[in-house]
Length: 95
Image (cartoon, rainbow, N blue to C red; front, side, top):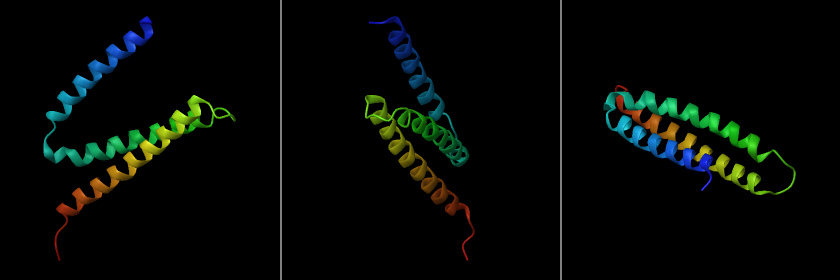
């Protein structure tokens, strides 16, 4: 295996464990602000995916992966904002 791929895989696994541990320790009152922050990060991922998707005029693997990344990141942003809105509705006073 190429050493760059092995290092990337190692970093990915460490980030996976660190992220799972971090999310498990977040109190419920902070979930809404963190959800909004992660939606902003997904918006940045959409911009990066658009750059990758529009890189060439021919249909290459990068273009296909870029289009898929745009689709998945868009679903993530929209779903995240829907969940955030629903959570905020729970804290509003009822009439």
